Length: 341
Image 1 (spheres, rainbow, N blue to C red):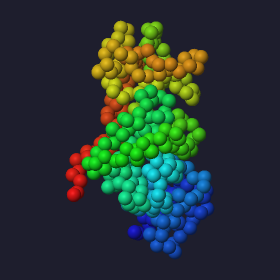
Image 2: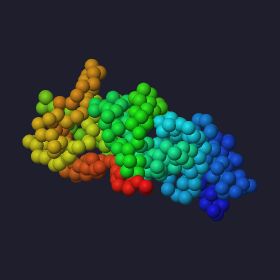
Image 3: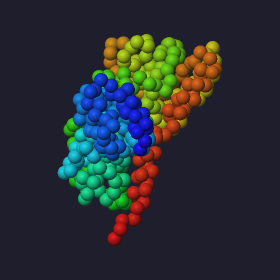
Image 4: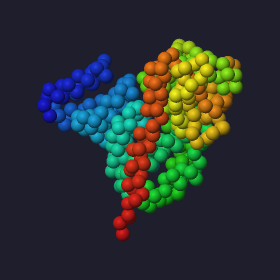
């Protein structure tokens, strides 16, 4: 590869990981392109004090240079004789997964390839490892995120992973051991900010002041809304660190509605659960977190244009989770595979 292209990539690295003198050897003109890749991968893997969010974003890029560095980075991990949860613990601690689905796809694909190379007889294909890895990550969220009320049981975890080993089932003992490992100890995820909510709200899909109609007491209150990660959060003040309420958008729809003396309203509702409360939570003035009381949420914007913009943004967020698409396509492929005789 042309040295000027390498220079561009290493300038980018300097901007992201500046103030680290060990970076200089990676830029040396006296080593080959291949060894530069290895050197940079080793720097990202071993150097202390780097921003792990920046590492994840950098490794997840799609350009060939990034893909080669990602491959070298993953190959620095030794997964031999580790079960899948143990390997994931090591891998997910070395950087922070980026938020973009395609970046996660590339990184988990590289992980699955490396794990199967280190443990040749565990799975019949890298697709199996890829799917089960995502299932474990989702299990970790289900069991240890306090906002998830419907906890995944062992039986459900086994059921959701049937047929993923090239059309065959994985041993129940293997899945049980993986489940128990996550249940007993959640993944330790790098927190560069020291505050996961701060990271969540740092780059929202949309934010702004809106009026929200109360659940039991039908009064309008001005709230600062943040739309991110398929959730709608609202705060009393923009400076608040914790939201007053959280509305997960899964299974919800949004539409324009008319309301007396409030012409620019939108409504969040569940089309399949009429008369039932939407799964949401709010923080009371005394600090207690309680279940929301709304069967639907009515929200008012300041203008028709603002209302339409919010509706468009919410609909974009509500669309099927891209991670689901990544896994479901792979899952359909392996379940429909006819085992070789």
